[in-house]
Length: 497
Image (cartoon, rainbow, N blue to C red; front, side, top):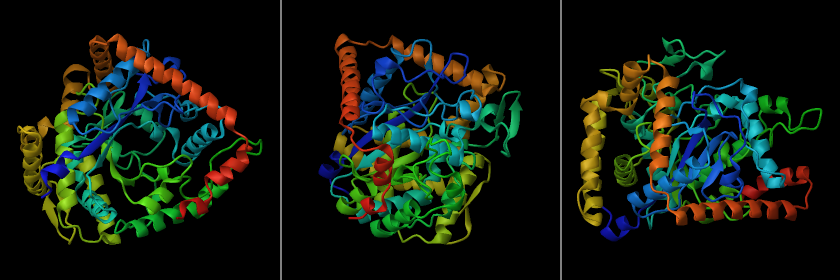
C-alpha cells in the first residue's frame, strides 16, 4: 500500500466532450462561438472532432472538489456564450444531419490549424463523421514515483477489468435513429425515433461506438513501453491499402487525410486507456513517451452522465481513484494476443448486455464467471485503497462512494443506463432525443443560475482574447508551404528517440 505522502500526490484532470445542440435536439451547425476564443489555442475550451463538438479541459488537481469546481466554471463560461444552444448531456449524439453535413473542426489558416482539420477530414473518410460525434469524459490520472513499467502494469489490469466501469457508470443504452441511419446495427427499436438494447450499459463502447476494423489489426502489446511504442510506430508508418485508395489529396488539390498509414497520428489510436506524456511544442507524443517515459494515464471509457450537471460526479471520481490504485498494485502478468481478444469480447458483452441477469464473462486464464460475482470481488479489492485514501485525506468519502456505487451490483436499476431507460419510458414516450433534450435544457438552466462573479467572467474573456491573439501570432509566423509542413508533421523519424 502506498504511503500517505504518495497518495496526497495523486493528481487528476478532466477532459469533457459535448455536442452543441438546438433546444429541439438537433445538432447546432453554427461555428465555434466567438466569445469562447480560438479553439486552436484556448487552454480550457476547444473543439474535438466537429466544429459543433466542444471539449472542456481542466488543469491538474490534487482535490476532486477542486477539479469539479474548475470544470463547473468552464461550463459556466460556455453556457453564457451559447445563446439558445445547449450542451448535449448524452454520450450518444443528438439528431444528426447527413454525414457530409456534420462540420469538422476549423482552426484557422496556420499550418498546424490546417493539419488539425485535415486530420479530422481523414477521420471522416475512414470511419464516417457520425462516429466522431460520440462524446465522453477522459480522466487523466497520475501518482508520484510510478515508473513506466508500473503504469503499463496498471494499463494491462485496466484492460482486464475495465468492463466493471461500463457496468457501474455506462449511461448510453439507447440512441437516436439518425446515428445508425443506413447501416446495419443489430439494435432493437424502442420507439419511432429510438433504438436500444434492453440490458445495454454503454453503446458508445460497443461495436457501434469508437471501434475500427482496421485498427483491430494493430497488434498492440502493453507489456512494456518499448513494445507498445514499436507496435504503434508500425501502425503510424505502414501504408494501409484502403487508405492508399483514398489518397492524400483529391484531383482538385483538396486534402483528404494527413497520410495513408493505418493511423495518421497517435491520437487516432482508439483505446480504453492510453499512456500519456505532456509534449513539448512541435514534439510527437510517441517521441515524448520514448524519451521521458509515461507521465500519466488517460482513462477513455467513461460516458457522460446525463444526471450530473458537468457529466461526472465526485463519487464516480473517487471510485475511479480506488479502482486505478487497485489496477496499479495488483499482480499484472504479461498480456497475450488471446487475452487481449478476450478482454475485447468482455468489453463488448458488458456494453451490450451488462445488466442481463446471469451474464458471464471470460476469465483471463480460461473459463467463465458471473459478472456480479467478479465485480463484487473487484470492488472488495478496491476497499483497502479507498480506506488508504480516506486516511490520507480525512473522513470516509472514498469508502462511502464505493459503498453507494457498489449497490448497483445487487440493484441494477440504480445504474445510470437503467435510469436513462426508466426516465425515457416514464416521461418521454421512450424517446432518446426527447429525454436528453429536456435534461440538456434543465442542465443549461441550472448552470446559468449559478453565481457567475464578474472576476470569473473577466478571466474567461481574457483567456478568449489571448487565445485569438496567439492564433494570429502562429499564423503570422508560418513560413513553410503546407505540403512541406504535412510531410514533416507525419515523418516517422520524428517518433524515434
